Length: 348
Image (cartoon, rainbow, N blue to C red; front, top):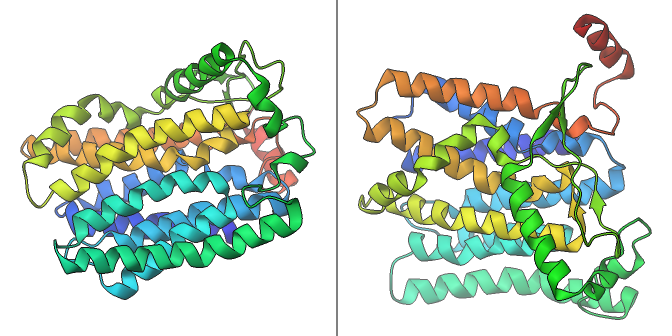
């Protein structure tokens, strides 16, 4: 429960920082609904369903990334302490979950848009390198002492159905198909509907070429199933206009890089271990933040019409309701057994 609440706090603080810095004028009700969508559609409830030792590190990675972005997003310039603390959080995320290294691609972008030219940028670069080095060196020493290689994070010793080192045995065409499969399912994998509670399930995903080496394919859900992501259809128009506004340009740059980075992490996860709803927590926030920002800019650029704000609130709440039961597929429901049995009784 504590790790779940810590991620809730980190994501809420991050979204509040973005709204206060770049999205001033957002109606309070829209802010609340967007927080609900951010917490629901990030699928972080999946951290309830697995062994504590495995999920603590995964949850900690998401928490550190959220806190790192929170510290590095400041429109009026970054202090030395803020840069050091933010980069330390991003580096600790890599120590908790190696694929979090891809999220560190946002660090130089934030340093670039939030620091002035000249000597301050070199100082910012120094303040960014030192925290990463402080985490990387002990981590490499630990990997070498325990696994015999500085690049080994224990993947050779995974005692599950997925054996990551053997994945390189797949031929290039299989690897290409797996990459395409990861991209396709991340965007368009449908949800399965059930007549029993909780009614909404992630779809099982079949992938030709993954029989050997075996990957984990126990369910996936595409972004198209969540209405809040539909605002991304207007992303090009909204972001292009925001790039021409000085006060909105830093956020437009950040969101522009978030979207392809989310796709890249999704493909990397598919190539490394497969597809699962609990793996989607690695990148869902990279799609959620741009979609919420895009929805606000649509409301703002079209004269702040009340109808657009109401539609956005409905999309946020509906998306959260769809996402909430998804991580329960094939797992134990996160609440007490007697509560879920009571809910099932009421549902029937």
